[in-house]
Each structure stands twice: as structure tokens, then as C-alpha cells.
Image (cartoon, rainbow, N blue to C red):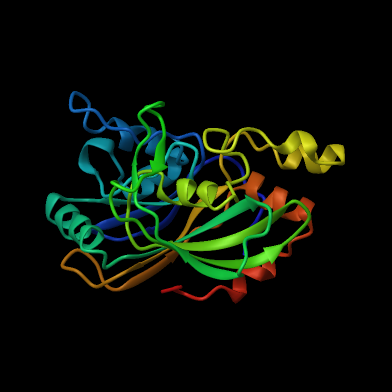
Length: 256
């Protein structure tokens, strides 16, 4: 279930080895060699200071396990020590972690359940983008349509691989780009009738949310299933479309 919260990041889970944060859109997790803890510092800066103090969270003592695009919201894992980081990163690399995303897309994908298996490579015409390319790297994304509405549909997606921009490119190539993803779709809200709905379908970032992570038991953590609520603008757009929060209760824990 979601709620209309603010733009602050939220601590979803914490123990002595692992911290899970619900990242708001707009926080960059890009990391440079000169400033290896900069991404963690930006993420923690979005967390209420009281929560960081109570949990003893400091940027130079945490290790980023994986990344999300700057416009994508949702679950991000931080390890508290190098051994935990190595174990969790290894679980991601060996595809032991089940990742579920929510996306609001233009149009209505058919059939209601399917799998995209298009290889991906860099777009040589635009260094910011990836593209479907016959000589690219294997990529697979399963999807399930949770709800359909005027102009758009809500999907839950499970990427089997972790290529750059994978979900965004697969959906755009299928003809159903993510609402707000101007890099791969261009603005489409101008054709929407109704001022309120038109504004809701112009969120300023892709409505893509890292919703759930199922982690295997490792030396760093027990078996865990973590869930993060979508941000307020995502929830507001769904409400404007008439999509009830209860649709999330029908989503399976994995698609594959």
C-alpha cells in the first residue's frame, strides 16, 4: 500500500550488516573514484537526520551495494562493512536477488503478461541512451499488467539481467515507454485531456520504482523480502487515473 509522503528518503530496514533505503527520485547514485562515498552521502542527506543519528549511519562507513538511475525511486541497499558488501554484491551479480519494479507506461501492453528478450547496447548517436541492438548484451525483462486506465497502464516488472536502462529501453522498444521518461519517449502528456490528469502525467521523472527485493540468506544477512512504497507523485498519478492502491496486493512475489 502507498501513502502520500514527502520527498525524504526512508529507512526501510536496518540491522548490524545491512541498511535498506527508499530512495526518492532526483538523488544521483553516480560514484567517482575521487569521491567514493559521495553517492552514499547524497542518499543519506535525503534521510531525516534523526534517523541517521539513531542508527549511527555515516557516509564513510557504508558501502553502496547497487545503483538506481537518478530519476528512479525505490530500494537501495547499503552494507555496513566490506564483507557484507562483498556478500550482497555477489548475490546481485549471480542473480540470486529477485527484483520487482513498478512502472506506469503509456498505452496498454498486450498480452497482459509477457517477457521481453531484446539485447541491449549503447546508442552511438546519443551517449546518454541505450538501445536494442542485435550485437548487444543479452537482456530479459518479464512483466505483468496490474491495472489499465485511460492513456496508461500500471505494470510490475522483473528484470532477469541488470543492463543499464534495461526496463526503460525494453518498454520503449515495445511501444509503451514509461510515463515521464522523456529520454526514451519524449513528452506525451500534451495530448492528454483534462488539466489535472495532464499535470499528473507530467511528473518530471520516469515513474519507475524499485518496489521489492527478495534477498537470499548470505553471510551478511538473513533471507529477506523488502518492500518500499512508491513516492507521492507516483501515488498521486495513480489516484488521478483511478487506479486503486489495492491492485498492488494482487502482484505475485516473482514473475519468472
